[in-house]
Length: 117
Image 1 (tube, rainbow, N blue to C red):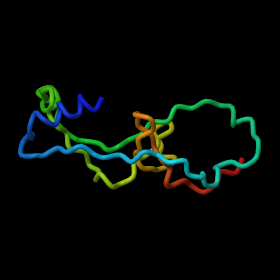
Image 2: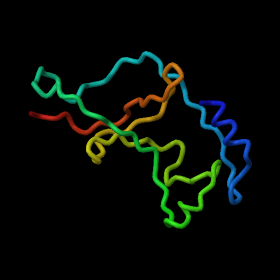
Image 3: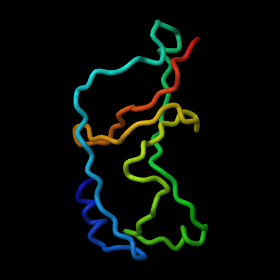
């Protein structure tokens, strides 16, 4: 994957922009904080699929259709801003991107108030 990113970045700036790689820190074995639900509950066994949103980009359909390989799309979020964790399209937590054994991970930094069921 890093070769793909390096190749992507070597293509040069697009429309005056300069893309640069983002260094992700390796996740350390830190102690987790308070869980959303503390007691055993039947919902604990339900599997869900979370999505991580690092940002969005708005463009016309014409711009999308004329996009070329190696073109850089600028997102609406700064590198240091947290990413959103989505469940069914709704933000349920926020966190920061980290590297875990060569793959992306998210360290949760913001949770809503504990759930009461």
